[in-house]
Image 1: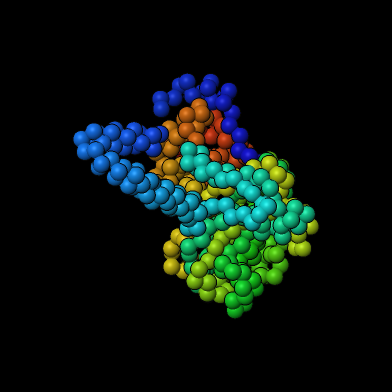
Image 2 (image 1 turned 60 degrees about the vertical axis):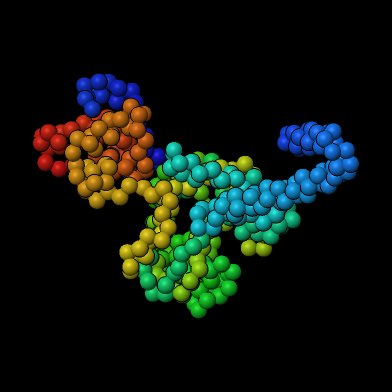
Length: 342
């Protein structure tokens, strides 16, 4: 159940808180030619050559303009950042919403067999540019929201989907392979420590309309993948997918996309991660509980500050499943030493 904020109550209690260039060239050439003809009679015969020179120079300029467009296209398709990968007729739109710290993915056309495509992999949200090492321990987490009911398939694999050692189709992880927990705002915990075997995690993951799933999973690398990708399949129905993953027009939101190699301590992927909180009462993640945390919560209740889901979850001090003014009051009591623990 999504964390709610009671603004009415907050306003009552927080009142006490202090907290066209070619034409120009032709005219210039014409003036030069007229002047040359007046000053040197027969020299005006050179005029055609003079006219041909700008014309000859125009072609490279046009080619240069075309060439300058290519780097921008390559930049948009930088595989080391999260991006859309679509195989015709599939189509998707991606917005990198830095202000709200999330990616917004719109399914324009899911593709699939009935539309002339292939399957769920016709439309993907993905990132590349990292490696997986066999026998290393990994942690993966992500948050996905959807405004329509649907399913998706997510995996970490090699680029070409060829078998590598024990990794079928080059997949070292997919869906709930490993020890996992999926928390749904609508349905509570919908999947916890469900799949500890590699072969049982091939099916798509469901998500309800208006729901948000917070997913975390620990797994062991079962093969060396020097060039790996993490992708979400969001496309149409095909030989392996009974129904389209999502209907056209569906908007999905992705946050807290993090992949960590626990063996080395290296973070391989990190996009809009949630705040890491180790100390109860610490909202800003600095491992200290002080008035800064109280101020953040107060401003959040007033709508002046946006906290991520991990911070909101952590701010439910009274344990009633709702973040509201009572939680702020609880933190105030702790800071004023009226209570010993939160």
